[in-house]
Image 1 (cartoon, rainbow, N blue to C red):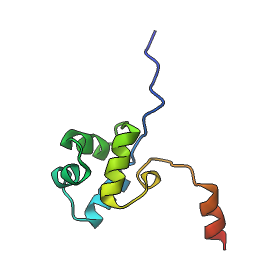
Image 2: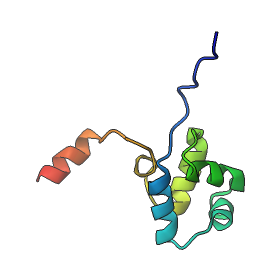
Image 3: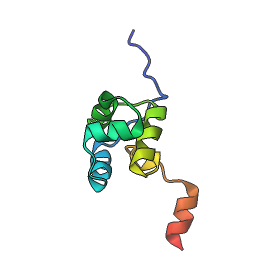
Image 4: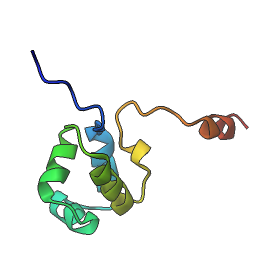
Length: 86
């Protein structure tokens, strides 16, 4: 029987991660240092591999974006829908 998939991990959108890195002119090593994580975490996120939320949070903070901005198919918060309609 296959192992159950860990549903506590988040799937980063590699394209969004690359765009956020480009806006700040970070390479993976610089981003890892700024976020205080291993460069392997950054490389994994860049490739779209599932990542622990605490690492996503550190990376998002270093990139000055929300975690939802880096997650693949992130649901839109109710408050954002109201703001965009008005």
